[in-house]
Length: 110
Image (cartoon, rainbow, N blue to C red; front, side):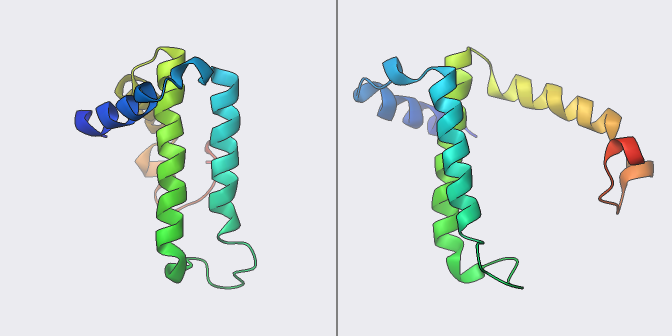
């Protein structure tokens, strides 16, 4: 996510004085609720695993999740790039290419 997008998200929040409501508990709840709204797009979709006709709705729900994730990082006082890169390093160690490529197995089963 680029700086302009992050600044826009924060400005929207700050212009409305909503930061006071953004504690980690409430933001975590909001992330979960929005993730469930994204999941709802796939409910009863049978074999249509991609729901392409619902792409605009999925994009909106995904955007909501990402915006709340920015708010969560701010509420926790963490740098988004730093925590993502730290997690990716852990994932790379748990899922080495030579063991994980082409399989959906959990790291403990590789």
